Image 1 (cartoon, helix red, strand yellow):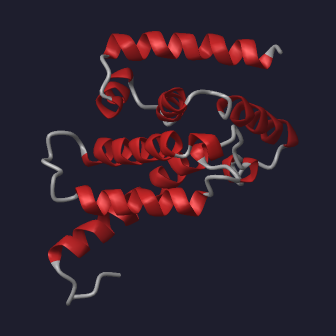
Image 2 (image 1 turned 120 degrees about the vertical axis):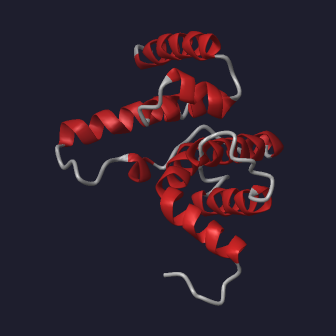
Length: 166
């Protein structure tokens, strides 16, 4: 619900957040841990979206811009706080609540446990891929070439496979 006395920038920001809150939450979930709580990351992303709203030129889709801000915010947070971060992810936040089968829930837990061991940029690429983004969309969000995304995805799959077999 938008108040009529809000300025246009606030209305636009509120609209963007309403539309992309699940995207922001998903990215923050992948990067959150005990030392980097979900709420802190989410708030940091919102601050950066607000700060960057005026500079958004519309050259990319708004969803690409939101992903890019969310991912870059989380990666930057982890780089700034590297000595305090740990490779964990809150499993309950990653399991699809609509799926009640124990097997599927276990598979999700294992997948996200493995993803949590990836480097921050690798996590971002996997998150976008799991969101069924094309290599072209991933390259736009990450600022990489399409060929680089394909190469990294191959290496990530190999790495995840190796981690799963350990």
